[in-house]
Every structure is written in C-alpha cells, then in structure tokens.
Image (cartoon, rainbow, N blue to C red; front, side, top):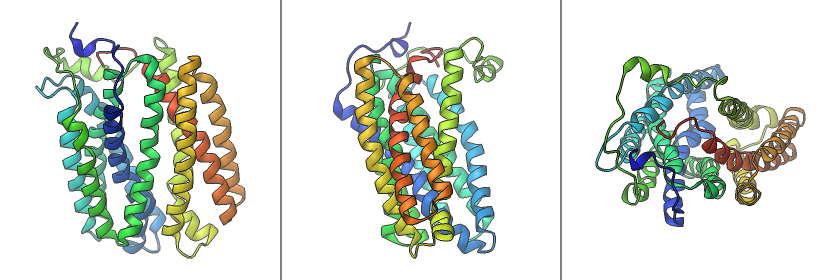
Length: 349
C-alpha cells in the first residue's frame, strides 16, 4: 500500500496545524466576508427592490457549484501524483482562482456578472477546502484529531470574523473584495511551504464509471458515515439560517443604524464563543474517546439559538442568539469533524 494511504501515527506539530488553520481561514474569509456583508450590499446596490432575491439567487447558484466542485476536486486530489504531494497543487490553484473570482466581483454592477464572479469563488475555493480538509486524516493520528479538529473548526468562524472585518474596515464593495482576495493568497503560503504532503507514487486507476459511482457512499453499507453526513448537513443548514441573511435581518427586522458594523460585532461575539467551546470540548472528547454525546448536546443548544433569533428580533436578542449559536456550533464543529474522520469508508478516498 502506498505510504500516502497509510494510517498516520506520528503526531503533527503545532506549526503544521497553524498552517492548515490559516489556509482554512483564508477560504472562509473569501466566502463569508462577501456573504455576510459585501454581497448583501452589492445586491442592494444592483437591485434595491429585489435585494433578497438577488442575494439568494447568487448564493444559491454558487452553492450548487460548490456541491459539485468540492467532491470532484477532492477525488481528483486523491489521485494526484505531483512531486509536491496530493494536496498542494490544488491548494495553490484554488487560491489563485478564488482570488481571481473576487477581483471579478470587485468591478461588476449586474446580476449576471455577480453570478459569474461568485461561481468562480465557489469553484476554486472548494478546490482549496477539499484538499486542505483531506490533509487532516492524511497526516493527523486518530487520538489527536479532536484537538486538531477543534482548531480547524475555528477557521470557519475566524474566517467570518476576518472577512467581515476586512469588508467593514475597507468600507467599499470593490475594496472589500480586493482585500479578501489578497488575504486568501497570503493565507495559503505557510501550508504550501511546510505541507509535509506525502507524494503518491502510483495513481489509482481511473475508470470513469467507477469514478462517478464512487461519489455514492451507500448509507446501508456504511450507516455511520450516512448518519454523520446527514447530521453535518442539518447542522450547517441551521447555522446558515442564523448567519446567511444576518445583514438584512439586522437592517430590516432589528433596524440597527449601521448593519455592517452590527454584523462585525455579532460575528466577533459568535467567534469568541466558538473559540472557547471548540478547543475545550474537542480536547475533552479526545480524553474520554467519545463524540456522539457532544454532537447531540450541541444540536439542542443551537436549536435554542434559533428560537431566540426567531421570536426576539431585537439587539439584545441578536446578541444572545450569537452567544448561544456560537457556543453550540463550536462544540459541534470540533467533535463532529473528529467523528467523521474516524468513519470514512476508505483511506484511498
């Protein structure tokens, strides 16, 4: 069996974990900065009477691209025999392409070009995410994955915080996109320089029919993975409903004077709560070697946050919702990431 497929046994160093986290932060900043602030502002500028529709259309089509791009990019990286390793070429290509998509968005004023730019960001951003996520089970031993998973979990909320901060600080649609593009390119450099990516010496045979069929993982044959995937899907739907339309929620329901600043404040509160719970509970789950109990508890906590946001649309309610949602999602992200890496059907894929 090629060494790239072997179960890792050597603990990774903190600087490797930091490089993986930073690359993830770059991708999520490139996504969540625009989603939480810039795309919403751009939708309002392009179509003030249909801003919610335009925003939903652009993000929805981009999500459809993501659904295809992520697993395809991951499967191709599994079979990459570059001398730099399986993952590095796709991290580099994805960062460059994602930055290009953001630059396209920075200079457009029509729905059609917004769609083009955002689909490019989703396509190439998912190349980075698929490859950098796969690096964790490639390199991290099972007993270290809860801790590493906790740090990786932070990347999503730190990316939201960084992206929102960049969008708010630079204070303009074009400047915000450029800032996110530059940060994305810089964020992947430490991983590219210190990846330790194992080279695949022999490529698994590529049979088109088997390649396509490989995207279906039978929940009957692999029930743990099926339940894990469904749980991850539902948790992310719940979190997205609490964050995706946050700008419009604060502007039109809570009626704050500066919704972009309010988004930044709530994102910071949310991020701190995720930081505390993800690291604490990820390490705890490693020590007791249990994952599911934490996933179940975090689901209850996140549901409470949804009730608060739905029935108390005020600034205190939004702050409380951010605290509860961040606490629950932090526990979930750290523990569930570790759980999923342990129930993957095959190290080959």
